[in-house]
Image (cartoon, rainbow, N blue to C red):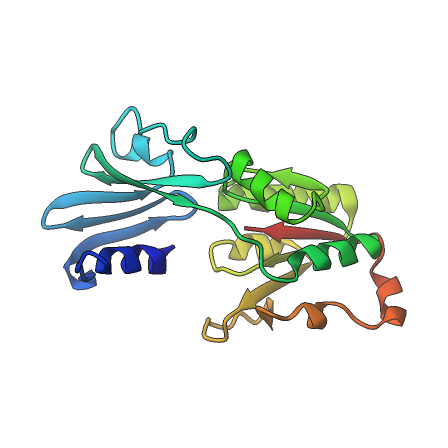
Length: 217
């Protein structure tokens, strides 16, 4: 998301100046906040309206289905909006089918709206068994605990840093990475194109039955 916004700004000859940002804060799963020349800037989802002391945000949901909208506030006034759309990685649909063949149940834990998840499910041929939407990081931790109690062994796969507690809660945490991210000794790391590393040979596959995989976005 950050790269896309910077690229868009540069198309208007606007260069980022991080040295001018003061009081920078990240509220995981919700809002990015900073102050520039004494003005408060908020970037995030609909929950930011309360943080910006604004009662409403523009309703963009009817403009395009299958995306999640984020908003930009200057002090208490909404000044911009942009859309985020999830495109599944190459090979994910095949990986989900393989997991189903192995008898591994899949659950998606995601911060996006149900409409955006529906778009992802279409790309996956409706392969995800259970979906939980509009989640904050702490919600995912609780859900993983519930799934462990209900289903037994769990593994979680994700590609970012926000959900380290959720990865730690799962019996197995798998973080996909680009190779330049900091190492966590408690989490197994694989390259982004590592589907072959996650599935063993046919004899070993039988050992994976009755496990539960959590896919996070």
